[in-house]
Image (cartoon, rainbow over all chains, first blue to last red):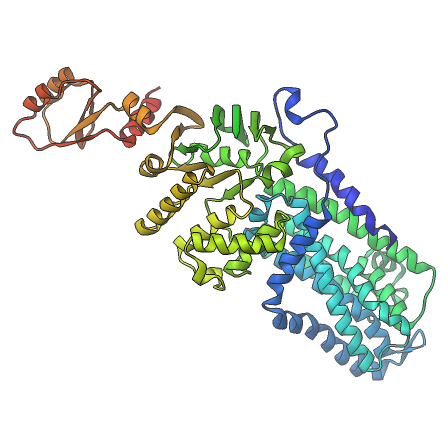
Length: 291
Length: 301
């Protein structure tokens, strides 16, 4: 994920297009030509993330149970239960194979929930976005703070998952120590995509479409339970177009100790899935809230 | 602090602010008074850089509103929104501390200011309370305290007492007067005449996206309503109306009452004679008279 530094510049470019839709009379009002548009201030982003952390701290137990419960049930139910009938895949016991992918899907779920339901609540029901927009923190920075916070939660989830897998004997490589960091980075694109959905959502029902047509499809067709290569050729292309496939490829490589050059491609695809959706999310959210 | 010229704004082709001019000076308390839909909130949102300027010019602290100076302007503003948007996920004190962090205020400074503001707004004993346990008046006071956390040069309040009961309203007025005494510049909107009269040094009366009159409460009353008013409740005869019209500066006949306005220097005696033996209300002219007079005139135009 070498391109993680890039979004700052990209986002600043986006806000240049949106914030000053100000029709001011007389050239002098907009300041001298080429006056700096507000740049993305990373400190402001961090402050929004901290706000989310402080809010989360009050309810973290419930939050942890819900974000870890599901993946662990899948892991032990499918991995161990079904695994006894399946045998090995790519030379790894089935439980290990599934576990290495579940790390990525649980990260996807955590990031997605955070930037859909939670962000939507903050944006609409609680009007927290509106409150923060009255301060020097910009809308883009608020959204960035939410996505960063989603990634932080992914870091936590991936850490706990890694420990569970360690004690369950499902990790095959010391490279697994990097899984939490990978979880953080994989969380970013899913946070950004969730933010797009939120920017478009007119009601809570809207998220059902994304969860059914996006999240669930990714969960089943991103190579967690069987290799994407086992799909019919036409579907393979679709499988590889899904961001989760690339997340699974990365967590699997780390959990099972199978480093290869393709990982750079997977990371690059995820970087694109972060930058492009985030830009769209910023644009749509400005259209929605700034009037 | 604020200078505005030809401010304009439309939403989907419908003009809501139609070219208004105004200014707010240092240490002044200025109020936008007008009915709902007059364009007050829209104007406020353009001043506070929350809504893009539709046309014209607004300078806040000498800086034109717009992307280039948005951050600098917001850093020196305090904003208290019409609908409370306190952070329900955080406690009372944490609300102030987290809000302070958005301004980059160091934590120790923020903590000291927060304590001070909570005691100023009589919330010190609720500092650990959840937001949803606060009464409407407490929430409003906390919103104002939050708006002051960055020691703003200009505090902007959108209908600061709408929806509050009389006790809570008076407490908010008391606090706002204390602020203006301390030298905070205040810009507020309201549709309560009494609020405008109580708090504001200068009032801009808005209706239909225009400023239809402005001045100090006294000036407005003297200019548009006169000195005193006699109200004779219905039923009253046309003859009385005609007679009063000859003796008064202005007469307004509505279905429920006949209002007779007297300007400064007018003689009361003949009118009192004309009203002898009747029940009537004699009172000083107030902003409501001004407002009704002006908005009614607008309707006729």
